[in-house]
Figure 1 (cartoon, rainbow, N blue to C red):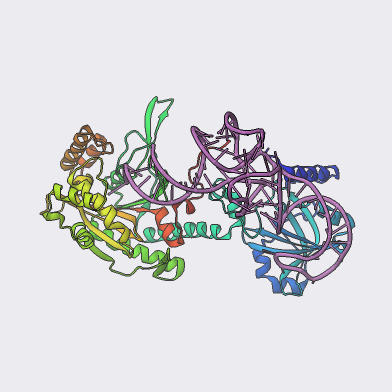
Figure 2: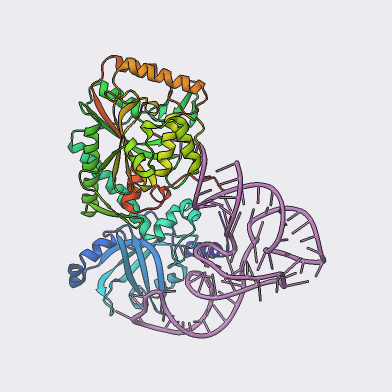
Length: 490
RNA sequence: GAGGGUGUAGCUCAGGUGGUAGAGCAUCGGCCUUUUAAGCCGGGUGCCGAAGGUUCGAAUCCUUCCACCCUCACCA
């Protein structure tokens, strides 16, 4: 155990309680017997309970103690809120009142008493009996500055949650958002499914995977980087509308928009295309805003963001033209490179035409897309799973949705031609041979599935953590993930 | 991976140009039966992130390392 002066003192108190025959960690409260109320319902039912002067019981963690000699006020908290309790020597008896000496901030106690209001009007329990439920051996962080150190907040999230109320709020929003998302999709006939996280081949995105090994089967496995290929197999299997809310893992850098494990919502709808996906995205965001806050407007990082149909739309080349005055349709690769050099954009490792376009977009356009904006019609080269756009050889039916400069959704009319899919994968293999590290793997099993017939399908992936960031007004992905990855510390 | 920054008591933070460590809360002792940042009186806090070095003397200067933060790079 980690020890210091304060924990030593608490250990001594614990020892003294044991010497007095009091169990500091009883399975159930010996005097109070049964915990009947959460603090929230004591407050809610206060009028009734105080008028009848009936004895009620509750329990919680001590977060404040104010001693006044032969009486003391404590505040306890549970998941429903905070309650003040008033402990008096003449109510609990001299012997029990002395036990206050062994009570610390952080301890859990059970209480029995009568509800009343203090002189200042605060709802309070006049305690008749109490029990220790669990002794805390370390103090809580300081009461009004709380826990600020970001590293400590993440490593000791339990303290962060106790001490910083806005943190709890963020995770409530996260929970509610997921609930409303499920409701929205279920109402539209989508079936929620689970597909494998451990995969013998990875795919559905460009990213470096985590690798692992199964002992009994002596098999190399990857942690999935996307759910896509399995969900499409389900579409082929006749589950016309499916979705998954799942953890994905990408072995890449960490910053305020990226955590190595993150949550992705992927949904697929047969007999739909990317236009339908865009409409679904619009409706979903409006639905979430309305259910969470009763509003189609949210504030993120000081910007008011409005969700109202239709969201603005640009094709990729329109967007680039608008923000850079560069007409990519009439610019050769040399022209793009020249633009990058003149505008201090570092060229990508693989200097292909569309990779450079993507880079220019990331630098010069994306950060300025504050209001919800669809960017339409992406290059074929970086979209091996999307259907070609009619009449455009190098474009596919794909869009991404940007809000507050963040990519929050990515959707396409799914490629369902197995011959085309096979040649796309082959193209990816050639790119890999040419030195592109993140290319799509060849997946014969997936192609075989598609060869049995796949309906035209619209598919969309939504970054759930980023949605939560938006709706919770959180500046970093670490604020919306309970336990972001950190290094192990001695 | 590169550059910048941070690391001092359980928590939040001070500690110009090197002289051996401070505040508030918490904690400990005392007084106090309606307080709520309770109050009043008194006390102890510490491997100054780690290891080396310079120096009579290092929290402070130098080197290396560790962790974290920010920017960039990487990255559907």
